[in-house]
Amino acid sequence: MSSSFTDDSRAPVAGKRVLVLDDEFLIGLDIQNMLESAGASVVYVSPANDAVAALEAGPPFDVAILDVLLGRDHQSSLGVAEVLVQRKIPFVFLTGMTGDGLHTGQFPNVPVVITPYESEAL
Image (cartoon, rainbow, N blue to C red):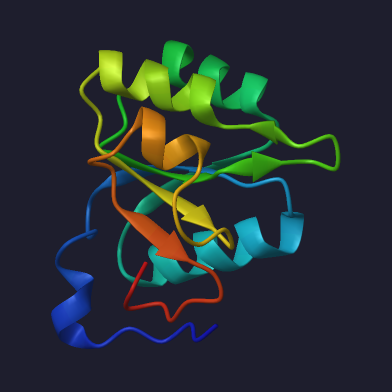
């Protein structure tokens, strides 16, 4: 993963409030650092219950980044995705799974960023 942004890539997230849901602390922290360096205000959460609580508690989010599979017991972020759809908050899935999966079947129009990725892709 690269954590550098060009000036052109800063504009899309600058000033945006971003929810990041990832079960891997270091990956979540790396995503947070990338987005904050591009001018975003980031709220990193894990587990999914904390993501739903953050959606209900604070100011609205502009966008969200969801790791599809969460934890060793293979829970998913699909419940959080449903809340985001209800609130009309755009989001992307972040996953190492390629091809069709549960997330692509239930949310066929949601962009998917395949890991590993470059910061520009995110």
